[in-house]
Length: 308
Image 1: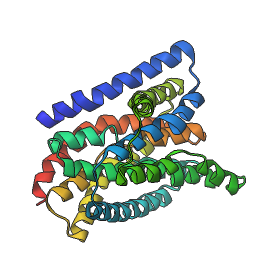
Image 2 (image 1 turned 90 degrees about the horizontal axis):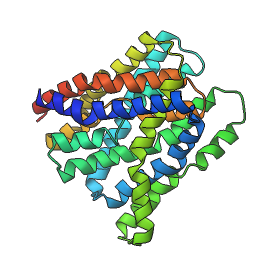
Image 3 (image 1 turned 180 degrees about the vertical axis):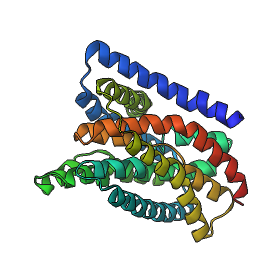
């Protein structure tokens, strides 16, 4: 009950309040969601990724093991969601929308505080979560954007050019390099980086609220619930299987499994809005998976004690 209450009070209710503010602001002022989306892609998201990677302490052995786990987990989930897509016979934009809703999960503003809660601020488990966050920042901005545009008629080279304009794909290697070489950042430069990165969560949640406020609320219940099951239940189950396959145990195994249990990422909504690819479905998935995660994440936390 303690974990349930903490997740509810520390994650779900604050997120819901911010989303509700976005809904109200849209109803009152008809905010331009495209502008909000571009701010997230080109300013706030790169800033928070840079700050977390620059300030992190990562060892090569942990980096290697975590990346191997992530690659296998991503591949396994991709195969699973492709099977579901074919069984359900999704067409057009729903294919990448469903795929993104399962493959991209909230590894930053949900998973990081969750990791700190469960492992009591352990620096080792936090380094694992930061590596996962790095990959979950890189993939939506590369593969995720490619996938929502691949089914559309047009020049694929234009899609690639769009991907190459996104700052986050350059920010990650720069942050690693500066971290590894211990290159200091002057205070007048680092202060605005802090300001911008601190605004990421609020802006992303407001964007989701604006999207929800602008929707006609034609519920896609079966599709949304199917995505929630794959993300919240199949995700940690597959993560547990990968941990067993690799022979990882102890607190590292627990941290990796927990990283797979969080709800769908806000990036799936930002991509859907920016490229007009099933934004209503994506918004409903993010909102509902965040609510249902109260129960599923609590269950996963309870089961972690059986991972030795």
